[in-house]
Amino acid sequence: MPATRDLSDIETATLGLFLETRFMAPSIQGLDLQARVCGPALTIRMSGDDGAPLVEALSGARPCQVIVIDRCGDLRHACWGAVTSAAAQTRGVVGSVIDGFVTDRSAKLAANFPVWCRGRSPVTTKPRGLGGEVNVAVNCGGLAVRPGDIVLVDENGVVVLDPAKAADHVARARQMQTDETAILARLKAGETMAEITRARAT
Image 1 (cartoon, rainbow, N blue to C red):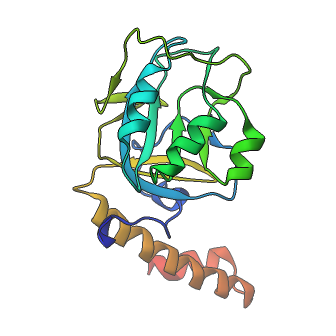
Image 2: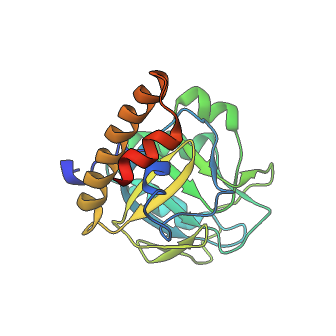
């Protein structure tokens, strides 16, 4: 990924200081709170208990991609488990974001494969071949996601950026994180938030 699109040192919460609309629902959270990954989206739309679209996507996935799955409102079936994590890792996928449920949490953590989802379920999808789409615009966590959009996920949640705007967002976020380090140092030195805020305003 070009350096201008590498958000691996950026926190989603930093982007949240100046962006409002590019975040998924906060209910989509990571199974491992220490994980942070970023990469271009490989999108999947799959409904109900049919896991065939995921089989197709994993077979053609490329290194550094983040799989983004639109579950079309399914609130029962887990579409991701130990086997899909292993398949993704062998293709070089760096993580997955699922608007739905997963299973085999302990196996994912043991394999060190980062997953963000709405929760867990013991009832799984099956490769029925009834429909679904890969590499199309999807809705995940209330957010429109296109193939190739830049996905950043960390302990605070999920943000998805237009590749054409990612460089500007990266530069602004890095500067804000640098400024925050200076503010923390001033607080430790004894200044108050009011003093720092007044100084910045003038």
